[in-house]
Image (cartoon, rainbow, N blue to C red; front, top):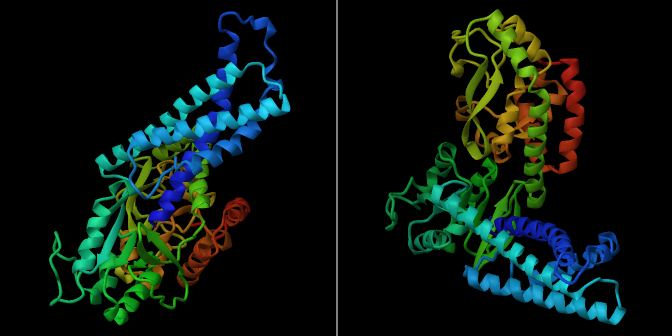
Length: 466
């Protein structure tokens, strides 16, 4: 978990570094042309010297990595990071100048290259200062944390809790501890959330992103059962020793953090760079589609208000990633303040009536073409949803899930999913669950693209939409 965050942050930093290189090179080149004793009329076109940028890009990436200029699991003072950046740029300039001297390459001025080194160093430091600033701001606001549940209240549990608290910049926070049993509660800062025998119930009612078993190997039977529960519910689990447990679904890996070994079992996709790219594409695409469809919003609003009383938008609490609750937005398609058909507990999970008398005429039209879902582009833009993923359930539905069904919450919910392109509401609930879990187990960016392409004809066919 921690290592994935480090890799993601490393990728963001590297991407920004590579983008800064052509920009600062361009700036340095034209700054040199306007310095005294240099006529702009004698400037060689930039296209004739830009050939050196493809050489600089991989060289800078290597040197910055070699000098330790990227996010590390060890806390480094910014002064040391700045010194490492300056060294990497100086070494790169030395290599480029030597290369130009040997090959007599075309570059109008060595001074332009030195200006590039200065501007690029400043931009690289600004990038790192900005990333650190954003991290500190998020930490001060108490946002962007992942919740860690520690199983163990003894010395191991206390040590790992301190380990997490001492490295808040990694973006983790201790949700609480789980005691081995009533007699072995230990002495931790907060009262334990419960006992290990009730781990399934604790995870069912708490928002937990990561479970760490900080117990001795004398309790392997209890730990193995706990890992099985985490696997079933789609929550990554780690163990502080290197003992391997057999798993049916979860992928297992050994992570080392400053000499501390953790065995991690995870059923979520391991392509973290692809998940990060998916998040970026989601937000860009949602913004574009919002701008395109924005003229439809007042039209639908007028249709809704003219045909029935009540608000234009329907807001409902739903469960997102790992059970986090958020407000889902839709165009209202039902009569306002209608009575439910009967108690939720008496109905099948996610039940929908085929010819619901509470649905308005306009609502039936909007549902037929899934136009009532358009406001969920706002949820995607906010990062609460994705274009593709399991549909977000109601909290009352999640309360009735079996443990194996809760694993579908281990992926960010989506606007469309596999079962929606295979018949939507005509799919039986258990088959719906199995399709969602199969999606999680086989996820890739190409699979998302295929589902999106199949969604278009599915929406126009209107099959299963009511």
